[in-house]
Amino acid sequence: MLPLWLAIAALVGLGLHFNVDRSVIAGTVVVLGLITNAFAWLLGIIALVPVIGPIIVKVLSIGFIWLLNAVGYLVAYVAIRRGYSKDVLTYRGVTIALIIGIVIGFVLGKLI
Image (cartoon, rainbow, N blue to C red):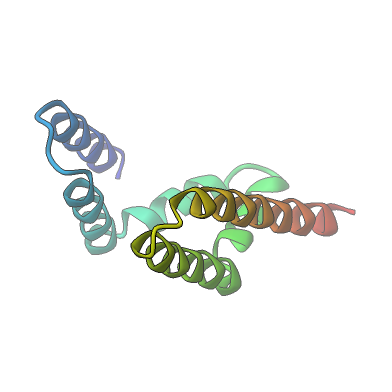
């Protein structure tokens, strides 16, 4: 899997060098990662870190975090369309802070 991730990183670098649209690059990485199970391998590598690794993997696989982030993107899209771009930046910052707080709380709760 390491050569695959190196190839993905090289393709991303080439795409950025040749000014390919970032959404095309992101979509390609997601599709390649899902088809080749590269994301599962990466989570497996993270899980190998003693004590904290398995906890991080558990947090990353919590559906609530994914749902919260998806709703945030949908609300941001609607708000940008209506002209509230400065408010969207504030909202996204608060959402990211909330997600990071949930992750830190979960990790500390498991360790204590």
